Image 1 (cartoon, one colour):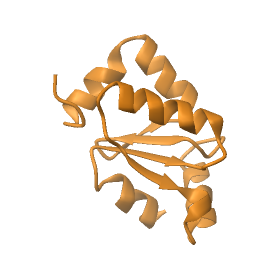
Image 2 (cartoon, one colour):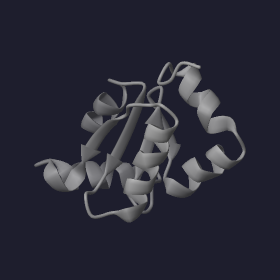
Image 3 (spheres, one colour):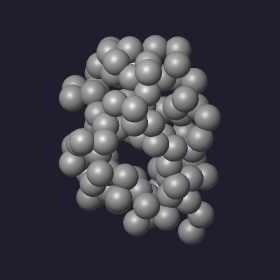
Length: 102
């Protein structure tokens, strides 16, 4: 859990993913299209990935990926991020965290 929190606080936008996850790809693409450059942590390529996956589940992220943090705060998984984007608040959250400037 400490490693997840530490990594999540190092950059304005952080996404924990798996390389084989299509929703992870969609969320990363959405962030790039909004102008953000999030830190991406591929759990299936990290030796501590399995432990981090369990820590993410402990935070309430089920499925465990994608898990999105903005400004060091856990935002949620794909459905949560898409909901924020649809209602217009995702962009403002990224601006407030200084992940994008508009």
